[in-house]
Amino acid sequence: MATNCTDGMAYQVYTPQGVSNPPVLVLAHGFLRGGSLGTHTMIEWGAHYASWGVEVLVPTLCHYSLASVDHEMNGQNLIELAQHHGATSVLYGGQSAGGLAAVIAAANDSSALGVLGLDATDTEGVPGVDDFIGQNYAGSVQVPSYALVAEPSSCNSNNNGISLFELMDEAQVFRVTDSDHCDYESPTDWGCTSFCLNQGGTFSDEDIFPVIAHLSTAAILAITGDSGAEQAWSDSSVSGWVSSGQLERLR
Image (cartoon, rainbow, N blue to C red; front, side, top):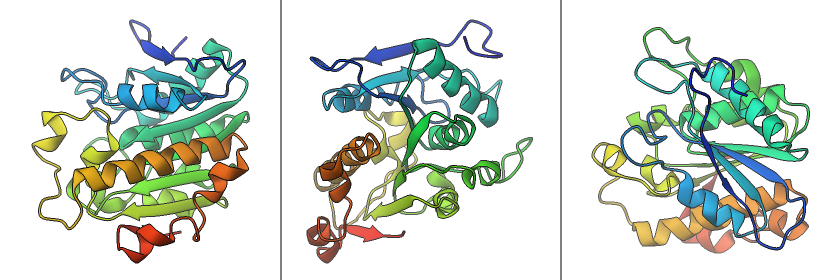
């Protein structure tokens, strides 16, 4: 099912209640965030998005480990997972390097409906890994794409993932003020919070999480064709957050 995954690729399925033939979201974790440190950082997002009528597949990627980093193969594996699951309407999403894998998958899957980036990153400055791999793929993404990003830091490669969405024709990008890389995981853990917290901002985690949850959920539903959810990303709908300084449109 998953190329070059020696023991196969484990994944969890979150199925919405009372929805027949739901669209499928394949949701990818970041580097070392698929449970190797004890916490799979996408599973609560999986349950949350499923509660809105989308079936969510949350894999443990084979090629984000200390022994193997292959972003392009992870992107291919996401496509293979969707096909294995029998998905005919599929969205790709991910946090950090998982967002890069989602972009690669969407660029290579003609059945892709769209992309969601949760503080997505591109490659840069990693020994043995080519820089800016994602830029080779992002321009080929011809479907609606949405990205939420944190404040720039070393944890999100100083927002280099924004450039991926700037290469797409149908992309929107918001920065959530004072958010950090960990705010785009659910759950997060010490592996992120020990290094990536944004300290001393105006907005607390209790302010930030509802913004990320609302806009990311709306993005997923908008990709599936929900016009009301698409409106949630309009300037008029977010004007309160923008005027308060909590949200900034980047694209």
